[in-house]
Amino acid sequence: MPTKNMLQAINNALDIAMGEDDKVLCFGEDVGSFGGVFRATSHLQEKYGRARCFNTPLVEQGIIGFANGLAAQGSVPVAEIQFADYIFPAFDQIVNETAKFRYRSGDLFNVGGLTIRAPYGGGISGGLYHSQSPEAYFAHTPGLKVVVPRDPYQAKGLLLASIRDPDPVIFFEPKRLYRAAVGEVPEEDYQLPIGEAEVTKEGTDVTLVGWGAQMEVIDRAVELAEKDGISCEVIDLRTLLPWDQDSVAESVFKTGRLVVTHEAPRTGGFAGEIAAAIQERCFLYLESPIARVTGLDTPFPLTLEKEYLPDHLKIVEAIRASVNF
Image (cartoon, rainbow, N blue to C red):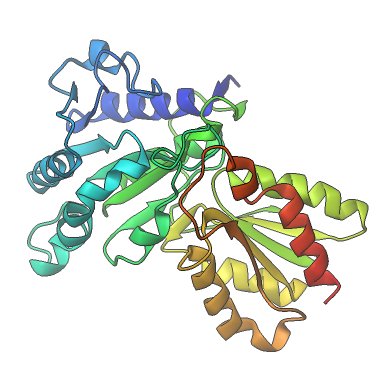
């Protein structure tokens, strides 16, 4: 099986989707001959032509408004927002148009074919306008799906599933893993299920939940915790909307403890939604308070990026505190 990094896996998924269906279009800022700022769309324009892979003006609201119109007319647009931090000018189009198209028409029309790709998160010394994690804003919006892969294999399978899903999907790509995450990826077409978490490691003492780049950080924390004799169960949520409550609850029924981690700030972060839902379902089984290990309630800093990010040392401290409560 060939080895790919995450960028190559994403490019491969786009290539397969465009080759299979002439209605699939890729567009965004610099995605054409340049291949995108991270090169995720490299060579797609030369293979499929400028009518199917093309540059847009630097106007995010226009990109998504244009994508909504295409999707409403039966195209399958894959719109790239160059950095997730730039998605906010398009916020109105996404939450008031994309998410509500089907509902407001009683299913007479929809934009379910739309996929929005956006590199997100820290770890590349990008400063406050190139490092944010805005997933919680969109997880609050009925009508959308929100997907985050953790490695190249997941990225290809989840992106293909997102493009073919009957609902609009925001696909957040952890950019610090673009070239750092390398793994075996089948050349053939395959999909992974949207809305289903994956238990990546079984354990008995504490459940750890994360998504995207935090999964690698969790694994490093688990190595340290296991030296203390703590058995950790690890769950990659993969999809935040809808998120797989049943898998997390089943794990917490077994372990009695839960630690959730994400890069986004703590207040209003998606870990709070997970903690509230699991507390409601698993209250009598909990052996300690549910812990959140997150970014700080500040703008994303440049020089203090390492201090801001929820690293493996912060997570292992939370694991120990939960087990020793």
